[in-house]
Image (cartoon, rainbow, N blue to C red; front, side, top):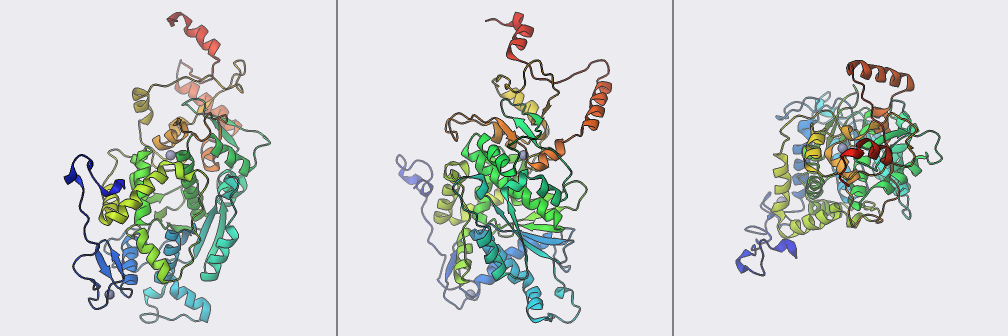
Amino acid sequence: MVSESCGNPSVEVEAIMSRRPKYDKSKICIKCKVNNGAIVVRHAVYCKECFPALLSSKVKRILEPQINPKPDLSRKKSLKASGNLLVGFSGGLGSTTLLDLISRIYLSNRMEIKEEGIAKPRGGKGHPRNEPVWKKVTVCYVEIAAGFSGMTDRTETIQQLVQEKFEALDFIPLRLENAFDPTWWDRVGGKPTSDMNADLINDDLFVSTVFDSPTSEPVQRLRSYISALPTHTAIDSTIHTLIRILLLYTARSTRSSHLLLGTSLTSLSINLISSISQGGGFSVREEAQEEWRSDSMETVRLIRPLQEITMKECSMWAWWNNLRVVGKQRHPGVKQGIGALTKDFIVGLERDYPSTVSTIARTCAKLAPRVGASGSCILCERPLQPGVQEWESRISIRATAPSSPSHSSDSFSLLQSLTPYLCYSCHATLMSRSSKGVSGNITNTSLPLPVWASARLHISPSDAAICVQLDVKEADDEIWLARKVDPNEMKAAIGEFLLV
Ligand SMILES: [Zn+2]
Ligand SMILES: [Zn+2]
């Protein structure tokens, strides 16, 4: 077991870290000091009666300072969100626990109103505590089955489960292919756009508009997106990103001020390490909490209220409360990515040295980028680090790939590069080829863009004309146009400088 040791135990015997006893001092609950303990949480013992209070206080500590529009650390004011609530539900242990805890802490009053027709005032009539924190609560599930062959659609099972247990809540089923679906985009209030593809053949990722292609069905575009990704790690992180953004736009369209996800402390630590290892260091804060704003609309606050609760605590909660955990759906190949490797490592670490897992999250919470963001990434909508391209061009050796056959040298076209709009992590996700790639040689190099990305790039033909004119004006006497050249044409232009 790798995580049981530090240093090299085969050479240095002293390097083995001694295990601490499972619990400190006694088996009696540290809270009530009466009952026998039933669960050990990071060496502290709790009884079954005190455990709910422990979880509830952890959820409140994370969530409540962020409920009122102005973050309020003192929590003396009454809680009133500026909009509705959207809870992301995957069927997994974390989101099942989250939905149950949130409904017990904040929504039980609301459920009573529905069941009995009358409200049961707590703390006197008209007391602000009787006002619901959020006016409307919606649960949202994203089905990923269509992206892969051989997966079953679980939307109905999930919908039944949620509606049986939480009948007062609304349920919105989404699908991963909605990310490529103009009708869905229109439904959530997105700006009109047209299908666009990016060419993965070289680092510039030139974008072209697709007209009436037979493969423009959302499911086809999703599958084509996944098949263009170079590694299992890229597929895994892309699915995470697509789900997150589908939920954010749904939050916006349901007028939600908050989006809650059931990321436990264990999952957060896994996400942090795996995201940093994939070049996502600039947005390390966003892994824990995000303020997302699109256009001039209201800000959506993405919060992970279970971020101080370990997976073990979630399991105990689900077990003691008879919660049905359907399980998160796993797509094929997920076990081969960086995410799965990190998970094995962190879960082993949590089992053997429980305190170290919270240290990862706490240490990352102290990290902050040195410079401010220059806008947001067009794919993942997380902060964009300024100057990445210059830095990358200084440190990397690039291979020039031949231009794709679709652009012959005589068809002159104005090409737009996607790269300046991407964060380092997204660009690396798309371009990092690996010897252990998904299928060896990737034949598909045309990457369909999700609707939110093409909407930001989309320029109608009349706007395009204005754009070019402006460019010409701004450049004064020099006119710069980017176009793709054929290898022979390039060779002819630089031939005299070549040594071979
Ligand atoms: Zn107790
Ligand atoms: Zn990005």
